[in-house]
Length: 408
Ligand SMILES: Cc1cc2nc3c(=O)[nH]c(=O)nc-3n(C[C@H](O)[C@H](O)[C@H](O)COP(=O)(O)OP(=O)(O)OC[C@H]3O[C@@H](n4cnc5c(N)ncnc54)[C@H](O)[C@@H]3O)c2cc1C
Image 1 (cartoon, rainbow, N blue to C red):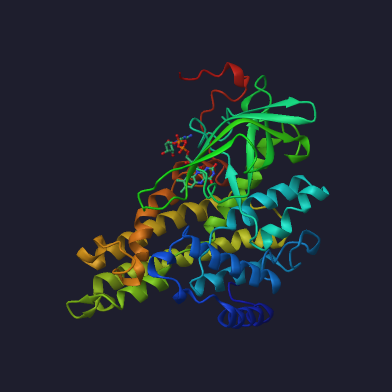
Image 2 (cartoon, protein in one colour):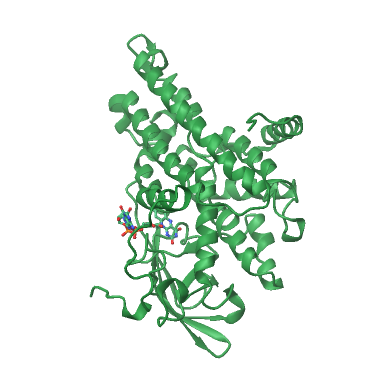
């Protein structure tokens, strides 16, 4: 495989790089503490950037025009993402909706109501959250206990979700609920989209060790939604889970966030015994290894891209990218704190170099190895679905969900 841009791709890259340079938001208008994700001012900059991109046809580039996309190619979309990342524009508010949930929704629903959800998401006017995980169902994503019971034309939902990124600001959520407890666990699930302002939806923020509030608990009490908000078939929820998780891992595994370029920028500002940390042979050796790992992730993401450009859905190979990328994020931030020495303890964005981006990432990085599927689950998927090794033990596979023993 040739990893270089073709002449057309190189021309596209040059065009979008110039466009981004001319239109990118000026982050310097933000105070240092506002430059962190989930701050209102940061979110507003992200929304305006999303709108600017949408007007220029640079959102959902590979989606068909009928869905509100630009009708371009998966390669063009990836190039745009790489150039955005290169320009330091890391906004994640719209990723859950546009890269994970809405593609899954459109794979299963083609009705007008579902299609009407797309344009406001593309323009950044509506934010989506993923309501899958529960206190007893994380890695075991088919073990969901929240129940949806049919009542005439509606469904009535009761249960609890947890670790829901962005639920505190989300307008809509995609929810998986159990609709039939009498069949094995994977077969009794159904997906729905819900308006987060529906009566009975209560979002309780979880304070993270980074100081952020990205994660939440979501309590659902007698939430009534019309059957028109069902995604896919009754009992077909597992298919929606799989499409979403494959999209999620492919998106995460494409390797966004702080990169080797950022740590080079940081190291050039940190005094060392002979110049800056960039001159330190031990750091240079580490940097070379990190660069090789980052390149491996970049090239691996081309595999997903190749299958996407041939019209295939993201496959289990996205798990390898996700596994490597989250480990790299932890390695990168941990090394940054090492070279900062005692200044690495300083998290104050006003005082710390590069507004404390690495300190903040360091506190975030462990979570990256859990969200979207833990390292162990990624390894199980690679073992079973990529390498064809024997499967994990699944004692509850063919047991009706109701009969699976549960703790008190
Ligand atoms: C930053 C972040 C963002 C998240 N965002 C969302 C979101 O937006 N929406 C949402 O629904 N969820 C979200 N999650 C939840 C996430 O999907 C779960 O945390 C994850 O799937 C793990 O589930 P759990 O926390 O219940 O851990 P458990 O599943 O209880 O796992 C505990 C430990 O056991 C290991 N383990 C479990 N099963 C196996 C197995 N079969 N083989 C080997 N080891 C195993 C795990 O690897 C882990 O180390 C997020 C989590 C984080 C950290």
